Picture (tube, rainbow, N blue to C red):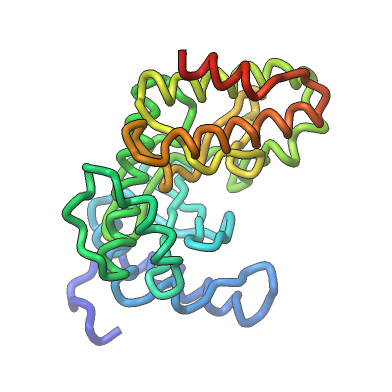
Length: 262
């Protein structure tokens, strides 16, 4: 790429080869749907800068593809497994993102351009994850971010991510324990981290190899002072209670809401 600096170390060159390989795979197999727009110039430069710090040794295949972001497996120092979340600048839902940022005093001065909103969203997820971990909520450990790229702990092993709660529930020996832990984490998130997840459901909770829930996708999470925080909390509680009721756990949304906010 002619617009990149001439002096690039081996780690950064490896990242470039990994990205090129992903593009080749995209043309050869449906399992590797990676659009060129994911690795635009800004994203590549952010990856190169993160790689130059030694944080990223090699970029692997895609873990998940969402409406706003793609998540890739990666390897860090000492062979540590990482998750690299890349928010798509061109195709992200700018209005939806802006609605969640609006009302958050931490990002009151963010300009309304699509690029700036996506960058703020990435920073917001990093900060939300940091707050959640301090409150002893199980979330991926946030390691570093730059522009639209967020580097996190990988929840899984040998490149295989832990399953979503939606898919794991059938194999759980004690669904009630997972339910209790989920409600406890929601309570800690609200009372100690002063956050509401704002999109919590069986699709945003992983179940690790210790059968413990791990909350993910916290870019949209809002502070409890947010004007729509209570609305989002009620929705989160409704989603969680409905899912666990269907899994055989007796629970009441009203009781859970009181427990979380008391």
